[in-house]
Length: 120
Image (tube, rainbow, N blue to C red; front, side):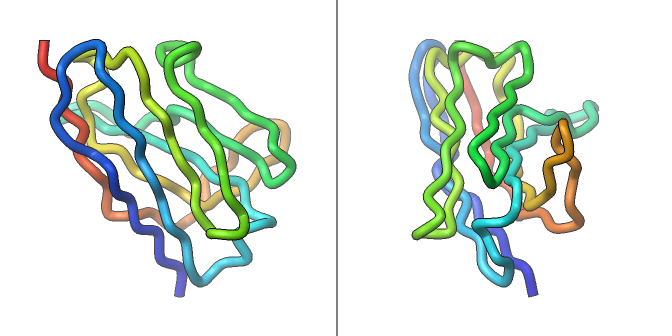
């Protein structure tokens, strides 16, 4: 059974930083692409950043230059370092175990999400 457990969310002032973690189990982590998504109330879930098993990385335009995705295959964990946070980054952040075929392909498994709130 696939389990994805996010942590690291919280309340931060604009301009601050947070580091999210997602610990995975029940998958062969090293062969999966991993993605971070976010969903604000009333909005659809959107891809924020993705990293393939080979280290190819993609970012959504709103977070380029501010967010960094990385992975540690020895720890079965993917990270999202978020710097220069803005109020519009406020969302619930989810990780996903997916696939990579030129672009990120969403897998069926999601974590429970972690709330990120950025105050102005």
